[in-house]
View 1 (cartoon, helix red, strand yellow):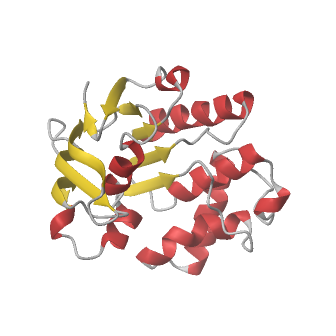
View 2 (tube, helix red, strand yellow):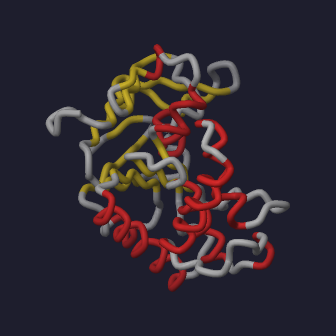
Length: 223
């Protein structure tokens, strides 16, 4: 992709819920270039998470255009393939599967792309080492601290080597020290891998660590 071409481009996004009663997005626009770290801030209910979910191909807008990694999501039939290939997702509540080990949780996104068993295990082991969880492969989420669970979630987000990480309040459930470690890890991964990061947060101190802060209000990007 040309460096001048946005890696994420959202134009005129409209999204409503409850049969049009609730307008989550009302013509939202966002452009992000490769390698940027962008924080999206705004009051509760302003549409931050909805915008992130549309970029993540978790849902489709009522109208408007979303282009991720050069792919127009409106023309893409298998959004699950976009999620597996182009974006890594990190949520406030890590969303790990409690019955699976750390290694197995990291491997989950690889099934969509048909990665072999041996390659899945080897890659999961390398990623857990990358996020500082050497020796935790066989532990289940209940055996890990909150910060460790979030690091497993980051490793899972990197499973298919996506160019984009999308994080929705990734430190929201952590204490300040664990939250700072997660942010340090994200910044380190960005430097090492050239990742593009888009993060939703309500905390302006956390947002200040980004290259650019995007403010939302009433379903639109206002600055």
